[in-house]
Image (cartoon, rainbow, N blue to C red; front, top):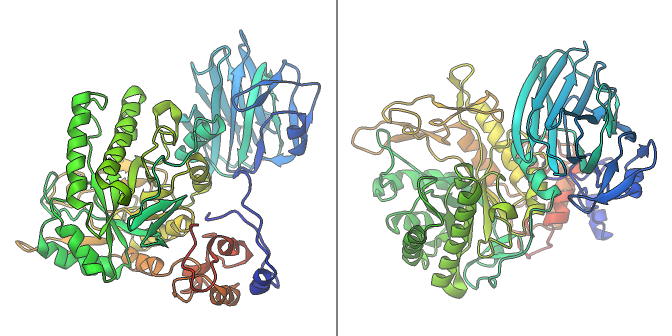
Length: 634
């Protein structure tokens, strides 16, 4: 959701609330439905926990932790599980223990129950019993060590015909399973014991329950956040005096808050494949610029370096309705030693040349560093890449000086981001200005942006999002589904970060197989409606071979949907560049209205397909008053 505020729309007089100086309460302190720090007895009691006996508290992962002696447990009254949910916590087993129940909803072993337990000296088990009492169990071995803290996330999700289970350890998915049959858990949450496995002996810290199955990126972020592996601080650079700058978590262009409404632009022709110069053909630009303008895009993102300023020239359009360029700097995802001084010098010199080539162009938005190197590297290699990325950001600052443009470090989702262990926390990345996340969170972002806001002081830019246009289940294009999903995702993104860039402008026939044929290769994913990502079908426009001339392009439904979305800024109903009393009155008129333009496009802040009091929070974030400019991201 864009926000997690609640308000009743019954008899709501929005303008009167503003006249009285009323502001909604801030978002939940935690995105979880239950959060118990387990620091002390007061925290447990405040969350409705009832302790079965005396408990001790010891130093934990984050402040204090509860110490289970082997005969004590905690029951949280009124906290039962949903058919879809997740639990997350840290556990440190006592020396020599070989079994013990860690957590359950209901009495494990009975129908409609969920439980997590220590199984043997080093293993963790996760069990779901359906309504018929049938068992679905996951075991992950060699993950518990005496005296060592381990982060555990158990998630379950109602799917067609049954329940999908996921068990993650220390931020990474380790095992999945599926159990058929109905599942309707009703029992209360209990920690420190389960049926069958009895009481735990060890320590537990940072307990959270969510009413959704945590996505893989959320799981990693919970691991980092709950253990304070993030270190939050602004960059060490002064605010830029140039036309593009970052102040706090807001991106500014020409002194106005700027939300990126972007698209990834890589118009590789049918029959071609990288490496090929795709940014130098005037005929391609003559074809593409009107398309991009019609989509109300204000930024294009490149993955690699343009060969000349022509790309920036044509999209900047002499400053008349300019489209800015986030210029990418491609770094190989593997096969090099990012810590080798010779490698560092090579990429420093290449990037320095790129910065000097484009730094004075008025169409430049900033510099994109790499693309998804975090999912191709780990450990020392990944730490070395993050250190190199920070050095490249420093190089840009050295070359540009006081008028520098922001650098954007592009990672695949939240994985390995904002984590001191791999040199990606704010203190380590003290010259990088913006986090770029390529994220494919599915239909609902859930807590994604709550984590992103907490893990870093930098603005977050979603550098890729969306779904492809090919329905892999039925072997056909489903343009309507693509349009619906991408539009819905944008509504959750807008207002929660610095904006986003859709993946992608046009289909890319080279990605899966023969570049002369439109193929269906890709990978399975639970974040698409058909369970599959088809790499060659992501375009807002589709392509047709046109002989010696540039390929012909045809807009998909998602093109028109996003032209509407991008052309209707959040909360600015009258499109006058500010959010003021006129927009508040327009919201008042839209309460309860059908989700049609402008109401749905402008005011459905919760992205829940309803315009009601739950959307009122956007005015707390966006309201500026007359002639003060948009402040939705202040």
